[in-house]
Amino acid sequence: MSGGRHTEPLDVHLIALRDSETGPEVLLSRRAGDVYAAGLWHLPSGHLDGPEEDVVTALVRETREETGVLVAPADVRAAVTVHHRSPGGSARVGFFFEVRCWSGTPRVMEPDVCDAMGWFPLDALPEPMVAYCRAGLDAYRAGARIALHFQEPGDPIAYTPPVDRLRLLSEAGSDSVVPEDAVRDFAERAVGRITGWTDASWARKGSQVWRADGAEDGVWFIKVHQNDRFHQREVGAFRTWVPNLGPAAPRLVAADESLRAVVITAVPGRALHGAVHLPAEEWRIFHRIGQLAATIHRSAPARPATHDTLPLGKLERHLDGARAYLAPGDEAFIRATAERAAGLPALAVGTTHGDFQRRNLRWEKDTGTLCVIDFERSEDGPAVRDFVRLFDAWDGRPDLYEAVTDGYGRPLTPAEEEHLAVLSVLDAVSGIQYGMAHGDLELVERGRHTLARLRSTSRP
Image 1: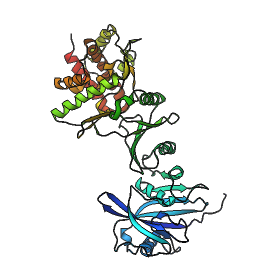
Image 2: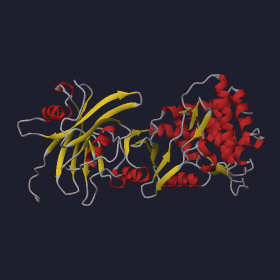
Image 3: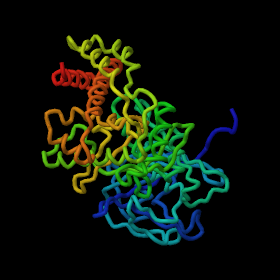
Image 4: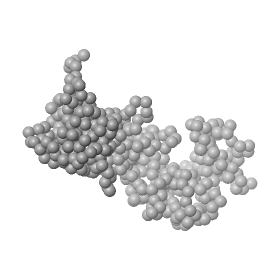
């Protein structure tokens, strides 16, 4: 053992909150006189008087001495605990408490060490501010229960984003609310301090996605791809054709190949997956889907295919995994489809989204804006590939099919319709195989429904 036993002081910090028309406000005081961090804003705070005083009693006492208001111990709520080290090397442990109820009006009670006191929006804190205090508030806003704030020699006492040393710790026994440290550091180097993390990953196993709320009001999404191929595809799409979509797609802020991570901007709207709309609004949505597909497919000139554009090579493997869950007659239909596909000519190829489906499309009703996300499956292929996972959306709804083709600028050619039917069969088999292997019954049922529908409408 080295360094001896720790004898850090304990201090307490008041996070007094009140509601306003623009959101919650926090009480801050400005240090003054011959004190540490004079001229900087700080939470009302202080040290324990001795071993006979607990942290709640200390908070109630310090609050009365510094602000003149009375707080009942029962109204004190634990917020976050911060282990802090100053630039000078001394360490301490700070207990931050939330209080929303008190008696009296806050005012400067110790003018020799404080020259101002006021309420500030919790999401627009003043400058300059003590870095330690800012770390506690940022950790509190992020929902952390404990955090580290170990400053380095030479760091400023005042909060400065480039040398922000806050590190949030996840709670035991729960899935991490925040990404691993390396991903979090990468994201904060790109956009600054992030005070709120929300897991936004799709329920199915795959890439991880978090919504990140910034200290200065920005919102971004952080994505860690499940493999190098997906990372390269998505980053490649963002750096080539996605900017052509303008506000209909996110922008790439930063990428890290070693972490397989990206930071992207947020887009408005709600996913179409599972949403219900009135017929008139549905027509608008599907018309816009056609327009968006046309923009994607025209982002680079189409060119003749150099190989077969129907992925038949994986059919046997997918059939092996799906066979036990197929309806009678399905396998014969699938094989007949594959035989017919072998005689179809290859289509021209170009840019495709690769996973153009309702869960990756977001609709903002008030503005009529449709956005597309998730480009990790983007690759060159026939344009009709992007309609496979929307094919069932207009089943029995010729008006929606007409809306899509009207927005697209043309109907599908007979050859494209042949390819669309074949690709839909192959996608259904793949979905059943994958769904059973990963316990995703929704994929299985969607695949079975697609096969039943295609069998009922196919030519003899």
